[in-house]
Length: 192
Image: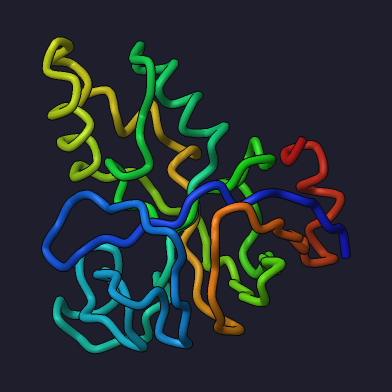
């Protein structure tokens, strides 16, 4: 297995019915996800992201925690021509530095945080209109942001993950990212 070292820069919680997350000093991670976060839970009701199920079907929650990359947020901001895209605007949970292509990590890559929490990547978190609207709200001087956001953040929107091992998670922790063996050669060039 190939391992890459990264760093946890921020922990955020998205309150119920909010479109923006809030920075917290630490997160309590259980097998259901991040305590207090809107996406916390063993199951969810299917929606537009699960077209194989009738809307409202109870299914396993594989989107318990979302991860964002400092580097990808900066690339998205540059593409949009704005100084910054804040992780709160994307309702993200964990902000990682040191992984320039976080969104391209293969499914089942595992994140081993130094405090003991382990997450498993379920896949890319594709851009949608909600973060576009929030980003636009913070940049009213440029009315084209919302229309450009989905394209600008494609393959830069981060990942969604589920909890393999619970614990407390805090900014400043290191993170060993383990790439599954079958993907090592394929992803090697994408990750640096």
